[in-house]
Image (cartoon, rainbow, N blue to C red; front, side):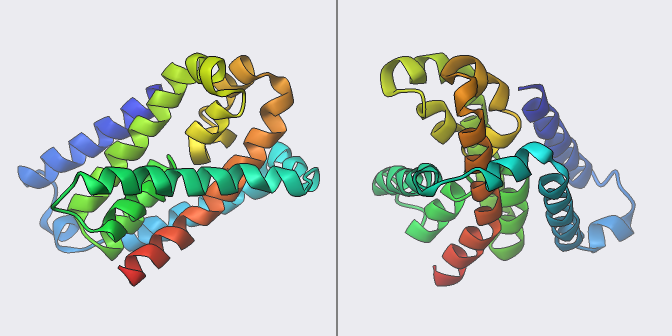
Length: 201
């Protein structure tokens, strides 16, 4: 949760800096989000490639383990589609793009801001931060009422890092490899799914 709060503090600092024009004009006049996206994608690749646990998770899979991220993707899209029914000021593509962040708030919000609008990027940031926080807080209840895979699915892309400790504690250590694999697949899928959804919308 501390990491989520730090992200929100940096975001708030950026908003205030832009609003009050605290930063030099050359920073405000140029859009650096694309370069930040490139750097973030590179670091994601480095993180996955350099993490032995991630590589072991990829090496120890069988066909059934693929069903966990697939189910998370389909369940997320179904859930945000239900929410869309009650919203009148957004399109289905916008709602699906926000959901396609799968908890990866930093990457999804940058992509959405770059491809669509800063406003929807903010929504993606907040929605995906909330997904991570809900997983961290509610994981024991998810296990109790929905089964041991529920925190893995709820954590989305974060099941390979920030929510992994709570998943291990509540679901059991035997689910760590599943959570790692699940998080890797969703992390890789975020930029592609968000871009495809926005291009079709």
